[in-house]
Image (cartoon, rainbow over all chains, first blue to last red; front, side, top):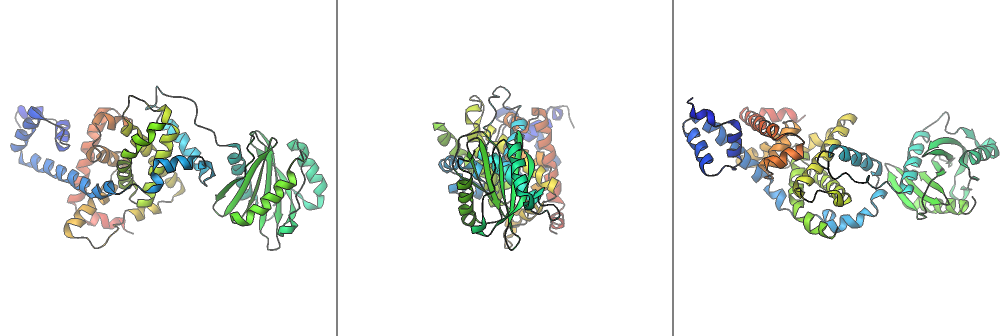
Amino acid sequence: MTGKEFSIGEDELQAFVDERLGGERRAAVEAHLAASPELAERVALERRQRAMLRSRLDAKFAEPIPARLRIASLRAARRTFWLRSGAGAAAAVALFVAGATAGWFANTIGPAPLAPPPTASVAQGAHAAYRTFVVEVAHPVEVGVQQEAHLLQWLSKRLGRKLAAPDLSPFGYRLMGGRLLPGGTGAAAQLMYDDASGKRLTIYVRAADGSETAFRFQKEGEASTFAWIDQGFGFAVTATATREELLPIAEAVYRGFEGKS
Amino acid sequence: MADAEALLEPLIPALRRYAYALVRDHDAADDLVQDTLERALSRWTLRRSDGDLRAWLFTIQRNLYISALRQGRRRGAHVEFEEATMPSSAAQQESGIEVQDILAALDQLPEEQKSLLLLVGVEDLSYDDAARVMGVPAGTVMSRLSRGRQRLRALLETGRTTFLRRVK
């Protein structure tokens, strides 16, 4: 090692591997390498690996952009973004990104990302409650159908809304009972039904802001949910069913509750 | 918002390339790119107008990837990544095997080194932009880059037995 060799540091070598040195500095590195065969071999290998990596990924870069990644289709899909089953996960990821990129955005921190529409959070709450209690064998409901009048009176009082149990017998479902749950900023009520085969369905109700009246469909795993907002309350019907099977039931529940507040 | 399409679309091939090198599965890679683009669209007005758009997108994509990786670890579900590291085509020519191995070797590096080798070596990000994407000082970028390349060399020099161990 001569004194001259010390002037070429590891950073220069990396920049040389990346072909980012020009003119004198590049010539200096080349001269340095010419005098150090071992180092020259190492650098040549790193350059070759860099080239291999690039050529290995060339084909991926050259692929046409799939339709689903076109900006126009993403924009169209954004309107139904929260319909997707991963709405909750997406929110979590969004929060993480917001935190992790805070440094990058340091001078651009603006308003918080858009909150999910109320129907999405109602559907989310309904789904979580469904998942928790539908598998419950010993205590699927807090108050059973034997005390239906008491159940509905109690839930109505806690919700601040008169609650009736829709008749779903045309669909083969009968009321099992219900329970009170925390929901949003207040209380939520869950009514549970089952059919002859033991398949369960829940109706979930809680106070919710928003004037959105359209049905929102969401599927998570096997469970499907239709949710909507009506006069300050969010409603959701959840069951292990297809969209087509669940829709007429949701419509019947909607008609059952409509205007009865 | 009108310019989003014109500015973003030319950068999609690079995002797909980086995503594929990270997750090694074509569909999962496009899922990651889709999440990245959706995120970019939702924060479009908040982006730095003086910053490099490409670096911003890579930042979002890497953060989403790391987040998914952590969630996967928490669940103990690593299957998709393990499977994704298997060479997709068994019939490779001699040079093809060597080239295939470079991605498998890359998979064995810590994520920070792997991402740097891709962002600098393949995507041609400047060292400063790479530092911003990774959220580390420029000096750290240089030392990680050096360590990553050293490690990659060692992996390829010790031969293919290293990779076979991964295939359970």
